[in-house]
Image 1 (tube, rainbow, N blue to C red):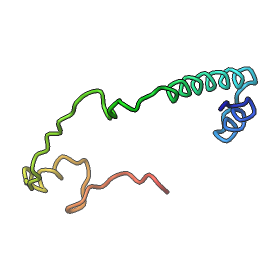
Image 2 (cartoon, rainbow, N blue to C red):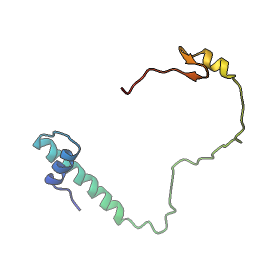
Image 3 (cartoon, one colour):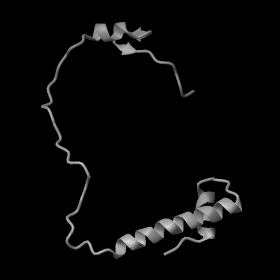
Image 4 (cartoon, helix red, strand yellow):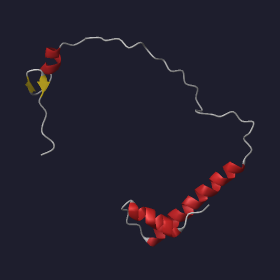
Length: 95
């Protein structure tokens, strides 16, 4: 499998990238190098290799979910520059 210069130019156009022809050729060559490397990896016999999901063993330390009320509503709202009763007032972003 290889990627042509035309395919790279088409994808660049879809991504709204304005690439010079020299860059398109450069990217096509780089993509083809990557695909060649991937093809070499596909040719390896991995039948006796156990799948590896992460090079580091992870032990997830979950804690029990517990509801804690550490702050009162008044304390939290007291830190806001502007409030309306029990709500934060924030600047309007969308007209």
